[in-house]
Length: 452
Image (cartoon, rainbow, N blue to C red; front, side, top):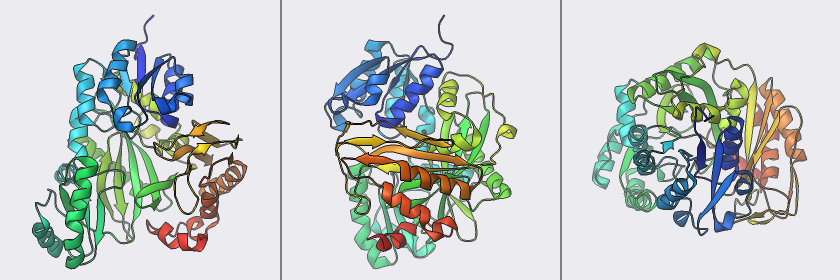
């Protein structure tokens, strides 16, 4: 009897998210195909999938970003769907389009959704038209530095230069005066061109002491749209998230509803399908402003799963297969707390990568503790990809309880042979400002000198 969802799913990714998708597929009775570079031959996702196909050498552009190789792997294994995970090709509209042309279901939003939200200025215009709050700024790219200076004068300094095609915290420059803007614009544009193939920049008012709060959305192909609460991602280093939690300590039920309804307006405006995340900045007066939308599953999705009880990967798969959502907005109730720490193979305070062989490993356990990871004892962490080797997630009745549980779990977490940031997370857990939720996105800049 054929599976009513998919017969076989290829996972176009690696690491913990590849394992996460494999496990969800197995629970749904779907066969899986792993793809891997030669550097990942001994990775756990290769061992756990039903089939595995080597797609190229270690460099990402020759393997995990090689669309032709991935589609060929899907063809030769007979996969009828591809899950892109996060990163790599997950928000690549061309990849999603080619999947559609090859009659392979892309487990994610539509090509049109990715195009609408992937170009930041276009997303800002859509948000503005939908009545979603925006920070003052341009809704189209500025053609040159003179235009940027003119816009900055209207907005008022400080402003932030952002790559129109940016993402992952890249292509961002904060400027406090015209002289600094002149020096930063060409450099930022050049960086954007190199990183994203698009040098276009836009200008936005810089919110000096914000919190970063994002709304998880889930939509089917039949017009049903839900928001599954929020995640607070304020603890960041150079716009890269290190720790996430749900719910946000600064939101109450009314504010959560207002932010959720704003996210729903955006989803309705583009007829959004599948999962996505609408990211907002929240200022000191608790005004919130649309930043961008990520048209994929997020690294930090487990904290939402823990507090809502919904398996987001399974919901992705069901939605992509055309099933109607069985969840109603009234089913979403958040009465507990979850925290996620990203465990990276890096020096805990210098933040330099630390590849190498893991000579001993002990992961924490117990009630309310979850570890999503792909490493094992004697596994060799390779230097070619992101340094994250796992995610430690805890779940408890209250934030105070979750912090206590995270401290205990971090104490139990042992990784030898390489450096990790476990000790750094321990220091965050004991920091008074973190425990009191009295911080903003600059927290690590102020916190770091005390740890050196």
